[in-house]
Image 1 (tube, rainbow, N blue to C red):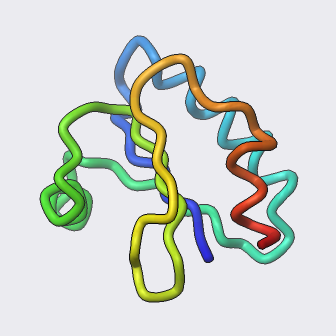
Image 2 (image 1 turned 180 degrees about the vertical axis):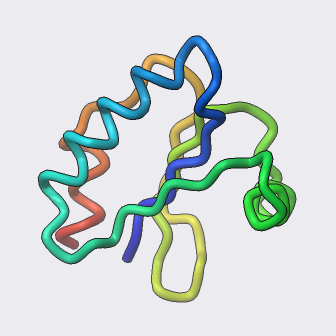
Amino acid sequence: MRVVIIYKRATDYGREVEEWTHELRARDTAGMVQEVDPETRDGESMARAYEIMQYPTIMALDDQGRVLSSWTGLPLPRLDEVSYYLTA
């Protein structure tokens, strides 16, 4: 499983997401946290594929790319809610 965090860095929430992501990465021993910028070609493609309309969006994906859980907007979810998917 992996966790994907899709957000725009140069926004009023960017710093908050970066700090939250840093804390999540500290719990991620397998390197399964991925940050995606929706303003890049790959990020735009991913946002379209998963029909993401609001940022930040955090998705827990299984090995086939299916969404197990997702969180959109602020406030950000508790780290425990998301880190569960990194250890499951």
